[in-house]
Length: 236
Length: 337
Image (cartoon, rainbow over all chains, first blue to last red; front, side, top):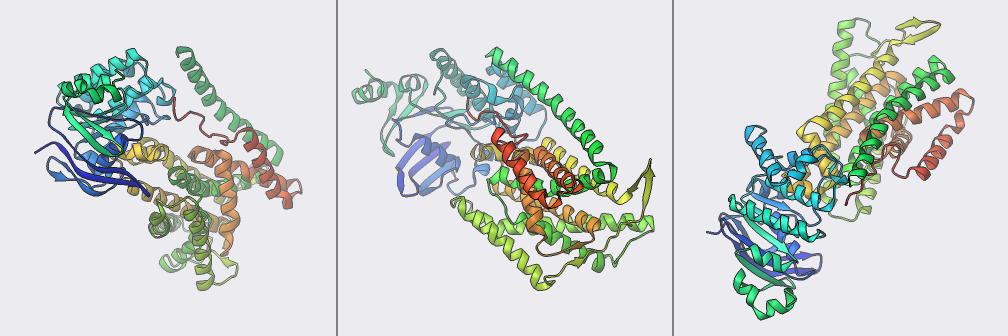
């Protein structure tokens, strides 16, 4: 049984058929990446897993439990953390309050305090800015906050939507190192990226998404050597 | 970056000091211009506007709906308070026995607030929730419809007359301060309104539900990704906003001693203006706007321009919005860096 599994998921935006039968799996302890161009349906896939969009047909299971009709806040409770596209931090709240919101469903206590420390260890920058309003931080710092906030919910699987978007190359490397670090501590990651090179570099397996359909799935090493993938996504 | 952060911090410190100073200065100025009697009058009117304005601003903040029925929820509350006083408490006039008075007032506030909170939540469930995904115009029109429905219900069951409200708090209780006579009623009204507003501020700032309300207002999707139940949060917002309108209804009845089915329109419009003036979505701004509008109206009347009161209020609104489109306390923090 996979940790997270999508089978033939179809999602619509009004009349637009955004996902045309997406099937994918994330196993315990894996980093899986979802690669595709603009408008391929990567963000929609993550939003459908989180329940922000409703699948019209198909099934989504988490640890074998069907979640396609579960409310978004319940899906969080079941162990799905989601750092959304565009970061979406709470701009008028401090860094600390944002992280506290990440632990919204948890009982305050020693365990949550320990997770604060873990997040601040991963992102020392956030510790420096603990009481600053999130909206006044740089894009990279907001990205760290969005990831940290998702981690505060103790997710079993972490959905990351374009964590490298708009960041300087050196910051992109940092963020990817941190993703590996998060994964090595036992959290499975489903990573959506336009930066295919970087994503294939750290993930175990990858899916190529084209116009709402998975057209290719393989080991990341094989994907990186696939001539079609090289030409379309790696700019080789 | 560091320089920008410094500027933000200084700005915040400056505005934190500026606001209390400006309010104190404004109140002192008004006290000087209006004299004590009119000052007290304006504070009382302001307390009522502020309580209603909070409901407008909270609902707008969370679902971007101008809830035109909110003024009528306040109007219905004045009638519910009549029912509570006469039927449940069996009182039709001033109560001079202090223990009885305290118990009666507590019950009057409590029952009216709870009833109106439930009415507000019911309206949300029946009229607005089914339209959550519809274009914004649909719930707006629905709100206007609910406004008429509430007015017609009262008109049908009570009649189109001005109805007396039992003034449980004795209006003749006064004490003298220098040369002015100060009715205890005014102090009671202002005190209870300000207490409710402070409790609300604490609730929003300190409780988990309050925090969920703030994040839902900022970003609904991100909020539900934190595990916030959006529907429940919106429901609670309506409960609280309508409960406060209930308190405003009780206060209006105790102070003015009468009501009618069209009361909600005028007061609602003024309170809505107060919410916009203060910065819609901002609860402190709504309270500030409520008092400001009351002072302008009372000042206009005191100088013999009573009929111009509304014109002056709305002119000021236009001027303020030209220079501060987000209202007095509206947010200026960018949503994206």
